[in-house]
Length: 251
Ligand code: 13P
Image (cartoon, rainbow, N blue to C red):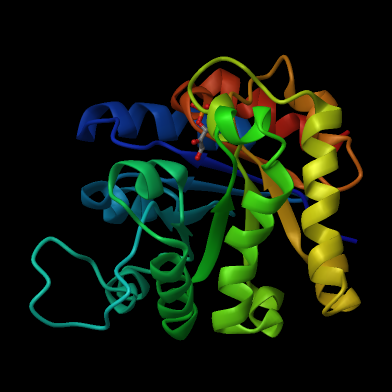
């Protein structure tokens, strides 16, 4: 059976003081919780602090981005090996904000995915369509093309050590959540695509939903057959919300 997962993507939020309070509350609230994989993706400067605060817990730590390069003259970039040095376990790749605001192509995302795995970091690959694409009936084509670009570069076997996240762009930070049925339909499609190449890998692949996940909708989303948990933005900045969302993975 696939283990449920909830990851908080803090995006570019937080300060040294704020993070200590938030994380202490989250750690207290999740004490004893072992059945779900819970992780936090803070901004780079706080990775070490978060890693330290989580040291005696089951919580995982992830980065929000990673360079496709191993090392070199790439000002402002962070290599996967550096994340690995810090004990970081996961890295988000292909988040829609990186695709849209920083022009990351699926080809680049595939390179980041592979660079993460080479350094022993589990990539969390995000895919998702915009509202215009959904309205044009292009959801299936868009998400499968984003997924296939990585499969073509890394091979389907690479997905035995990766997490997939479906994040409809129109639901991110907008308060609009995909209905559980809408989300399930896309999750099922993604799993079917992988299953056509490897049934085993598809059966074990954790596929998270992201886009305005809150404690009021997490329960209905997480009970869908192909939804294995959530990638949570805004609500992960509030300890009570995040703890409540994690609790829904136990139902
Ligand atoms: P929100 O939960 O704020 O919509 O963000 C979702 C997201 O982008 C997680 O990566």
